[in-house]
Amino acid sequence: MGVSALSVSQVQVTATADGRVTIPATLRKAAGIEAGQRLVVYVEDGRVVLEQWEHLLDRVQSRVVAATGAHTGLASEELIAERRAEAKREDASANATTDGPPA
Image (cartoon, rainbow, N blue to C red; front, side):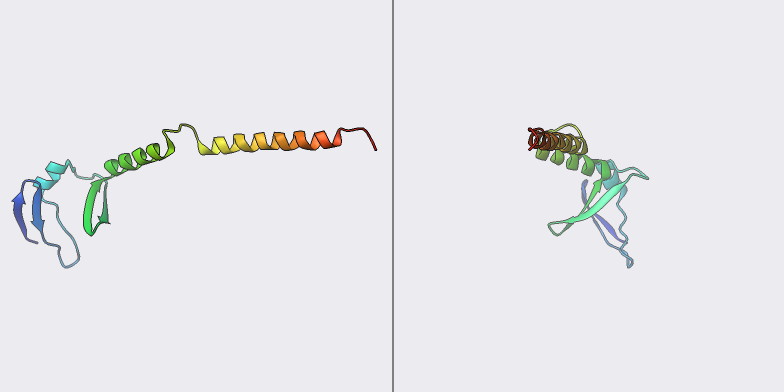
């Protein structure tokens, strides 16, 4: 596989016959990639993007916070509380219709 330098943060590489690409040491160092580190690879706008797992996780968590208005708590706890309140209302309504004088 051939490697030619374009700049410190840009290097031309060639994929092997089985699709492998080696990330040159200069790029690994510039990106803070260490041996054994978890990375994610995906295609975005026709480009192959290699990203540290932690960076992707931080980005996704930030989007969730933004989308939920920084809501705290578990959705499951809220659903349970809502269901309990609904059940109380249903019980109160059923008791109100059966507590009248006997016919």
